[in-house]
Length: 550
Image (cartoon, rainbow, N blue to C red):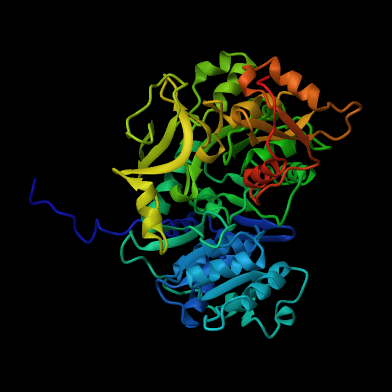
């Protein structure tokens, strides 16, 4: 068989953009996007994406150019996940909560040629443009007008045109630009917007196709699912589900912002079946003023931080079915999931929650995961106790960091991607993340997982949210410092001693927080992750603690 080789018929590049074309044929008259009083069908969404891609090409956007988007989860944001790469350009979603200085850094670093800007974010993007160095070529600005205002009248001199104008002027018969190779770059996502040295993660068409198909299979998303966009699309392209929901002909329920009552209202109104979000979304649901058991189960996929088992238990008691996964911007989505075994349904609720809090096993289509000793690269014991760094390999691992060969080579070693996350491997082959390497607290030579302490804190009936970081200590080097937010409406609020005593009863003494700081709300990223780097700064500013181990 050695004479048999690939032919042009079998060398068609893999790309998730083709999902939209198929879905427009199969589900053309079915709803694709619902937003307030707006409803589009899949044939309309397909046509609108082609029109925008056509306009981009006519404006001089060419393959390899970067086109940025600064918008919340509205219909235009969803369409641009297809339209931008269909023009041949590389899609760059920007976190809407970044300040002007950081946005200017990202625009300059990516050399963005054009930026789509939501009308409520026009001021911050104009400030970002003003901060670009004088010799920097300014990208063209396109305004996404709100449904309540007239598109053309809202465009100022700073903007080339309105988004709907691009739709209207574009060619619905446009032949979208297919990738020359499936390894061609498709998306550029930034891992962080907090430094002047951003990490721009580049993924190719093959990578995005692979994670999209694998994610659909792993989560078991059925045809014509109804998906509520509680996860920001700008966060790792919504974990690949913009393309995934198109592949199954589902319905995208879009919204600018949300809270617990809004989520429950939309679930009831539209018959939502699926949604994603960080653990903070689970907390929001369980603390909502109008929470009530669901008539029909809603599937929730959570990731971004290890969810406390107590929060998982409370969420599922309302009728939500929680799935837990793990991934990074560098993997384009979730590549590890806690694959559920039927026999676990017979276990007590507390044990089920503990098992579900683990990250799990590789998804279908991913190659391999492991936990290794950082220095030697050898696998740690599969005993659920030996700590090591989580390493990954698979088809959806990034091409690398934009303009950062040093950073790329540091995390790509010996055929593995080194994540910087600390975890353990259990005897049954399931991975459990214990911490980011920078979040491990080393106290008196003992490695303490902040996540384990947080899991205990979340079992306290008065605790709404918690985060644990290291505080400098004169004797031990570091000790755990707990930042705690309490639930509203408490008749009696616990004090620092109450929280410490509670922890003493449930964990080894060396792990017990030595300091407890109460806050109305903990600082969070746009995706709901608690910003531990902020809390570490607060703890460091408190000075060194003194005294003996409790």
